[in-house]
Length: 490
Image (cartoon, rainbow, N blue to C red; front, side):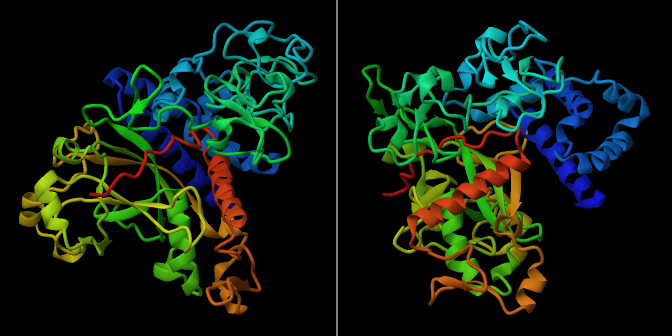
């Protein structure tokens, strides 16, 4: 990777850190602290390989200046345990156990001591080191995420107690949890509160394992997050039953868009959950390569925060309106005008048919109505935008659920299609006569990443790879935020 590419990736990562962490729910003083924390912790963004670290260090030196750089070399720039960057990361999770994350960690105990035996011969979260702290070894290949980016290793020769630099939702992810969870699948506190010890496709594991969000391995039982319990948008009635609350709730979750290098607007458009965007890419984008439809070359991830209007909720008791297609910024559904006038500019959704492309769970599309949805991009006048304000809330305002403030987006990174499928040069790929996918054959030509559109296992593998790429590029952001039910029907 060139210095220019590293610079671009790190600049994007830094922007995401500041945008995601300080855009919501903080006072001015906290925002200033978070901003300063970003400037003081660019060492988080260094590449992993030592060959790339040299370039990364030079870039950090240029950004921080020689004084801060000298402090970095001496190891005195360490992530403070209470900085608002990572507290913002906890806020990003929104729920699903976030309130039970021990952050900041308690006082580090047994610093410098060999923790391996006292932590049951396993790296990662360990109460012997103090709540929220971990037993880790410098550059250990098999330690879990809580050991990533730790800088203050007293010893490099053995596992020792350290403080993580950012909170993680799932403890010991990827490790074998079977012995640590009493040789039983299901909820297990060793994995973190409300997480579970599960094995992929095990018929003997309980219901919470069937609702696991992501499996980092299928070789053994491992710690996973699960959607068991009340789904986003519902609450516990008090007797274990999940019900819709009497008023609409704020929902926060990831949505994805397939985009090109062109800077398309993110309002008056459609997006999807991960299954939905992969469904779209496989059906419409890959079938027209080379070149791809609309020159799409990346999957962009966003945190969507939304709230149904009271009018929609009162009349139908649903969080999503019916789905409306947008083309060139114009809402083309026959009921666009009627629905906007009746219940406001609420987000809509629709479930797509897995028989078309077998991406599961249900591939969902969303719509994001913005200003002047009745006109295409080049026809949107100021008068139209004032008369038809759309539902996007101002960037620094909360989502209220008012007819003109039902949603907003925060960028949460992107993955290039080429890096996902292993294409080094798309231009050369096309020049050689290769094809990513041919619908009639359900295979590519000289290329097989997108083979098997109807094969559930192959589609799931592709989705998992997307998640892995996001985790590699943005380790400080949560991999999942949960997902509400698409109830947009009426």
